[in-house]
Image: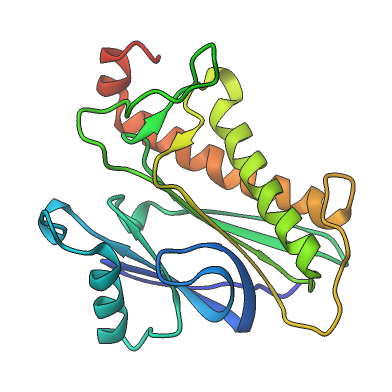
Length: 226
C-alpha cells in the first residue's frame, strides 16, 4: 500500500508529514486532545534550551512558528532525533506506520504496589514520543481505542525479554487517521486495524529500546537493570 509518512530530518527537527490534514488523538504539548494536523514535528532540545523558569510550550510554539510549522502537532525530546525508529505493518486493506524516538533516563519501574519509581538516571530527562498513522478512518471511539492499544503495545515492547521500565514521566502518544464522515467503529486487538497497529508499534519501540540500551549499558549496569 502507499506510504503514509514523509520523513523530513533536519536536526534539531524531525518532521513527519502526513498525506493531508489527518485527525489526531493524543496529548502533544501544543495540540492535546482531538485535533487535525498535516504534520507532526519533533524538536530536539538540551538543558540549555530550557533554563529554569522558561515555559516549554512557549519555546515550542516559537520554534514551530520560525519553521512555518504553526499547524503541526509538536513534540519535544532530548533524544538525538537522528536516532528515530520506524516500522510498518500492512496488508491489502490496512496500513499502519509508527515512528518513535526513545530515551529512558526518565524511565520508571513499578513496585509491588504498582507505584512508579523515580527516574532511573541521575538526571530526569528522556521521553518516549510515539506517532502512529493509519490508512483507514476511525470513528471517535475507535480512535481512542487505538490510542489505548498503542500504549499497550509500547509498554509490551518495553517489558519484553526482561525489560522492567514501563514508561517515562513525559511520554507522548499520537494516533492519526484520515478524516471521514464515518469510520471504523472498533480498533481492538481482534480487528485488522488493531493487529497491524500493535505490530508496528511493538516493532518500532522494541528496536528503539534496544538501541538506547546499547548506548547506555554503563548506566543500566550501575543501577542493576541488566
